[in-house]
Length: 120
Image (cartoon, rainbow, N blue to C red; front, side, top):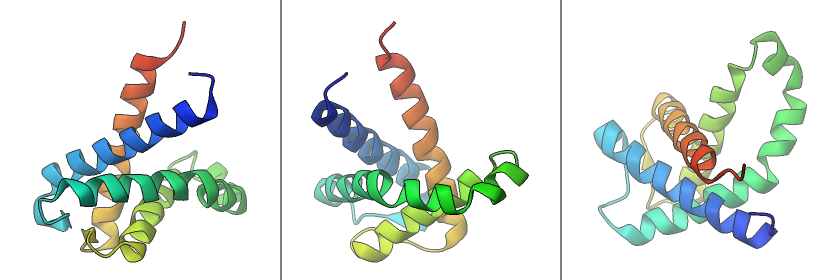
């Protein structure tokens, strides 16, 4: 997975899969109106937000991340999910707590998929 476009496609797939799993686990707190297109577009937006905006937010909040021993990343992931929810209204996240839980699920799915696909 050395080509950037292939890496972005995998990131898009992982974000969409994570959102779908999070919506399944969190019930009505994360909803997409049972439409696959909403998950696909939301996954694309989340992948773009994670590539462009998230590194800037991580750098700006580095003291908080270091002070909390990395736990502040959960808050940042929640912020990214909430931002996508605000940008794309068919994806509905009820509150920030649900966004943080969805961010945790997406992070776990990302970890599992990258561990499986990692070249040895």
